[in-house]
Length: 614
Image 1 (spheres, rainbow, N blue to C red):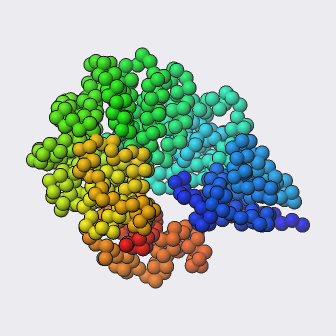
Image 2 (image 1 turned 90 degrees about the horizontal axis):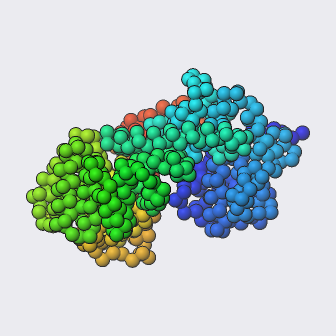
Image 3 (image 1 turned 180 degrees about the vertical axis):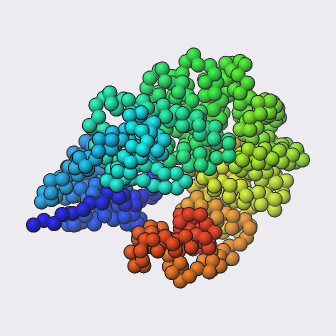
C-alpha cells in the first residue's frame, strides 16, 4: 500500500535574477538542489554543465521554487534536459508539462492540475473569489491593492479571513518587512486564469490598472514628503504590476493619458533602479500615442529629456525640450522643469555659462512655486557648475542651501546628490580630506536608497581618493559593475565632469583585484570603498567581539550569518522556534541592529570583505 505524501508549497530558495548560475553555484540554491537530486534519481547519468545549470536556475524561478512543481518538472528529466523543459513550459504552459506525476499516488497528487484543483475544492466561495482576483497580480502586493482588485463584493473582515485561509492552504504566500506582502505563485495564478472568462478577467484587470495609476501618483507625492526609502522599496517590489498597468493603458487610446501619468510618476525608479532603458522606451512609446493633452505631454517631454540626457543622447533631449517649450504656455511647473533640464543638457555639453544661466532661471521658478523637488534637483547641478567654473565660495553657499532645504522636507535623495556634488567640488579644489569625508557620507546615503546610478557617481570620486594602488584596482572592478548595473556611462555626464572623476590609470579587467571588486555585492562594495577611504582595512572588526553574546546567542548569530531561517536554526541547534526567536532578539539588541537580515548582511559582509582584501 502506497503511503500518502504531503507536498509543501512553501517556496525554496531560487537564484536571484542577477545571479551568475553555473555548475558550481547552482548547488547553493535549495530549489535547484532539489531538481538535481530528483532528476538524478529518475535519469541515471544526469549531468549538470554550465548551460544546464543556467537553465535549472531559470526553471526554478519560473516555478516559484515550489517543491511540488520542481518534483514534477524533474520527473521529465528522463527524456528532456532542463533547457527543453523550460522551453516547453514557455510554449505550452505549466499544466501540460507538469501533468504527469507518480501514477501510484492518490488521484489528487498525480499532476499539478489535480493538486491545485483539490486545493480549490477546499476553499470557501469568498476564498475562491479572492484567488481569482489575485491572479492578475505579477508581484507581491499589499492588502489595499488586493482590496481594490477584489472589489466591493468582498469587504472587511471577510477579505482578511479569506487571505488568511488562502495562506493557510498555501495558495498564496506571505512575507513581511515594513509591510505585509501577499504573493500568488505562478502555478496557482495560471490555474485561476484558465477558469476566468473574458469579461471576469477584464473587470479584474481594469480595477488593477486604476489602482496602480493611483498608487504611482501617491508614491510620487510621498517621495518628497520624507518617505523616500519606503517609496523606492515599494516601487521595486511592485514594478511588475506597474508594468502591467502601463501595458494595459497603452493598449487603448482613451487610457494613454493615464499611461503618461504613470510613467512620469515612476521617474526616480528609472534612475535609481538601473532601468534607464526601460524608462526611455515607456516614455517614447507614450509620447507617440499621446495627442491633444498638452499639460500631460509637457510633463512627459521634460521627463524624457532628463532620461535622454542620462542615456548620453543630448540631441534627443534637446528635441524634447524644444517641444516642451513650445507647448507649456502658462504651465509654470513645466516651464521651471524645462529650465532645469536645459541646464543639465548644457552642463553635459560642457557649456557651463549657459548651464549656470538655466539653473539660475530654474531656481527662481521653482522657488516661486515652493517646489522642493525642483529646488533640490536644480541645486546639486548648480553646485557642480559653480565648482567647475572655479566659484568655490558660491558652490559652498549652494551646498549649504541644498542641505538646509533637504532637512526641512526630510529628503535623503537630493541631499545625497548635493553631497556628491560637494565631493566633486572639493576634489576640484584639491581638498582631498573634505572630498573623502563627503564621498563616505554620500555612499552611506546611497546605500539606504539602493541608488545604483548615484552610488556609481560617488564611487567614481571615492576611487580617485584611495591611496593604496591595490585597493584602487578593487575599486575599478566595483565601478565597472556599478556602471553596468546603472545602465549609464560616465561619458554621458560630459567632458568636464568626466575629467574630474574619471579613474586615473584604471586596472585591467583581468587583474585579480579587479575581478574581486567586480564580484562584490552593492553593500559589500560600499563597505569596501568606505573602509579604503578612511584607511581602516587592518582594523575592520567583527561586531561579535564587543557584543558580549552568550554562547547560545553566538551560535544563533553564526547561523544567521549563513542566512538560515529560524526554523532551520531550531532544527540544527535542537531548540524550539520560540527559543530561537528569543535568541535572535537578543542578538539584534546587542548588535544594535533592527532586522535579522541586517545581522546576516553584517556577518557575511565582514567575512567576505576581509577575505577579498589584497
